[in-house]
Amino acid sequence: MRKFIKIATMFIASCIVVGFNSCKPEEEKKVDVPTDLNYSDVTHNSAVLTWKGTTTSYEIEVGDVISKVVTAKTLTANELSPETEYEWRVRAIDGDRKSEWVIRPTLLIRV
Image (tube, rainbow, N blue to C red; front, side):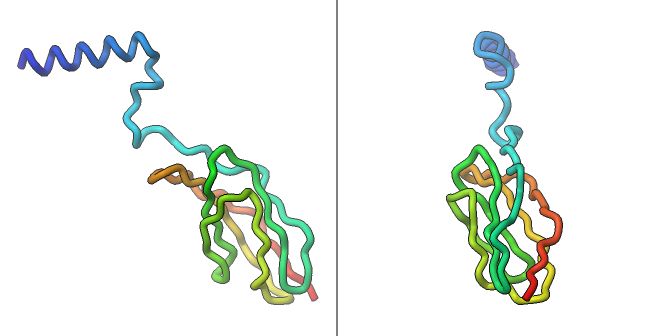
């Protein structure tokens, strides 16, 4: 019992010295979600998808067509079909941790 109290006291004391935010267990630290999802340069079968974020890896899904991990904050989606609506989403990856998905309003590919 004394050993546990001593360890807990040392942990609390170190948190006070360095700040409580640094004492959160790793699984409690959240990965920032990507922001400002946008698309441009839409053609009959492609679109350029962009977003902002603070990590170096992102998982992106475009409908049932594309699912991949990228290290850039942009993706040119080339495998799209004309006259089709796609929902697309992105989440940030930081090691083993992932952010929540951010869903972008529908992307419509026209002829």
